Amino acid sequence: MGVHQFTVVLQDRRDGPYRTQRMAAAAPMDLMLNLLERKQAVVAVLDKRKPAPFARKRIKPLDKVYFFEQLESSCSLGFDPARAMEIAQTTAAAETAGIFPWINSENPLKRIAGDMLKKLQQGQSFAEAASQYPNLFDKVGIGLVDAGEHSGSLSETFGSIRQLTGRDEKIRDKLISISIYPSIVFAIAAIVIYQLAAGPLPQFGRVLESLKGNLPWQSELIIGIGKFIGAYPIAYLIFIASLFYSLTCLPSLVRRTPVLHKWILKIPLLGKLALASIRASFVQTLTTLKKAKVDNLKCLLLLQGISWCYPYRAALTRGYRRAANGAGLAVALEEEADILGQRTIEYLRVLEETGAEVAMLERLALVMNRDLDSAIERAETLARPLMAIVLAAIIGFIATAVYGPLIELYNRI
Image (cartoon, rainbow, N blue to C red; front, side):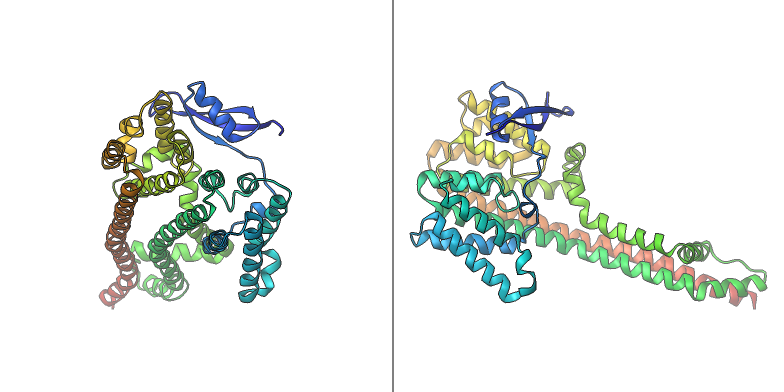
């Protein structure tokens, strides 16, 4: 295996700034382990190498869930990984062809399954083959597959990956549902303002000018916007498209800007929602890893990669260094309660004392997922009146722009 260049993100002190450095290694995980052994405060190892084109294409989460269901059911019937992959490839291709036959050739899942099947038939391990397709297997998924291969429990492994993928899809759908309403409000406001600026308001302005009257500033502003739109319609369309793009891509922008991560966690509503999501993902994934009998150090390595949040990743790195010195999981993470939650730490402490790790972790995962659902419901509950206030302000502005000239005309006649 050759040596490649990776970008390493380091944090020298808690809450300190992040710095990047280019380093060479055979694989990201090898570099991560090497840095941790040298007691470096590594937050992330970024692999900017471009995978194969079909390994970069986005796969719909529901397609992933269906794909992992096929692998789970095939392995549970006793098929070997290569045969299970062959069945999953055939079933996924047939499913796609049955609904959208004209895009079957462009289905990346079918191409990935076929490529993985060749690698498995050539003798590669499932984890090694899966590592080449980051759009299908994330770092946690690869770790679970590796543990499942060694323990002989690939069926349970694919079931766990399916559950994690389904949970992520559920969270994503809820967050999208929150953003739909404000998008509709802004779209309607943009259309109404354009119609007013291109229609009645300029006519009111000409009538008032003949009567030596003045339009309200709200009307003048809308007319000015209308003139700009008339002169530069492409610029207006670009502005509206940029507004929608920013609303839909804001989460991705935040993820790619590490300096914003700690500030996002401090925003009263958004920060609580982000922490609830991080904690639920941590406990759910830890439960899955423990069911696969993964040791604490490897758990912490895999858990570090499940979140975009750099403060969380740095907290897990600090916990790994303490665990590597012999501390238990609860002791290693007790100083990171601000990120993981004091309740999570106390549960881990009780679990280690009683030895009933998996059974109680599953119950804790249910509680944390309920907390996440409650946090999302609270966000929806608060978002609705806030959007109602914004909508009322927009309506009030438009009403003033329309009725102001009418009142002025009445006073002038």
